[in-house]
Length: 396
Ligand SMILES: *Cc1c(COP(=O)(O)O)cnc(C)c1O
Image: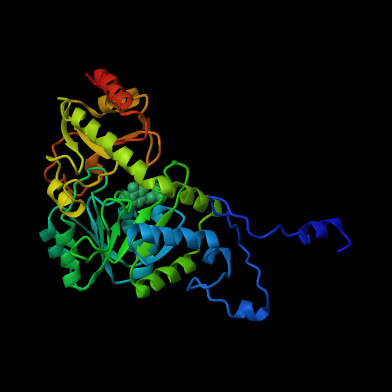
């Protein structure tokens, strides 16, 4: 080691052991160094017993996986580089050519796009079912059905389905169920026990939303209680190379302790704004699971409890007499609500949607008009209400 460069790489100094601080260290690695060839050969990347390569786990990812299992009541977890990658992980791990996957018509949009794109190209067929009508799901289940996606509430329109009825239909036929549990965040209800101790097989999260809480991280998770399913997900996760960055893992770990407090703050503010919006004549309908007239409110009560939690999302349907340019102008007139996708961060967001281009048919129970989805951030609710008020004046 006569050269300075070599000395800098293979430096003999190691800091003293026993450093303890509130946050975990950030373990960054592609390469993991083995003590011997025997150890290298004996590597087991599948069972969290050691380390083999950054892609297969580090102390950072293992810790986040365990904390997410605790949050959701699951036993095993794989992390993916986005919520959508977690969805892809489930689809690609469980489906083969000749299989069929069923998705709610109001499922997270890109899950549909994947079904029409990659899954179709791989010989996997799909159907969209009306999540608000269990009989519609029942009629579409067949011997080809290998996986049923559930989501509660539905994307954008926030109708809460009869999760218990949907789950029982699948269980009766022994069909695997996967729930996109991003909205519930592991707080609103337990995905593995909501039906009298029974629940879905896999719970998927976009950690991008509330668990990250900053609008600056993309990550997803697939959580199960079944070892066999977990091994299937883990194998496909390895083959797909779905690694996550250690700094992103650290950001989520740092945000998790405040998850419940933030979720409650978003929830309370959203309910106040829902009450106010329900009084505005320009909005013909307000969609929010805890709002009594909202589609599926009773199912939300059933699964989340009468005093249950409900996240910070709500949508309004703007009266048909306003054209889409006027609704766009309303959204642009908002100052605190920014135009942007995703949700779960400190900044309130708004997106106008043209449902006719997103759904097979207009959802039952929904008035006609343009849908505007709000994600309530952590600003003072009085300021948000004033912002809605001034933008509504522009619409009028
Ligand atoms: C955002 C979101 C996703 C996807 O998460 P990304 O990290 O943005 O890929 C999936 N499902 C739901 C319900 C979401 O809101």
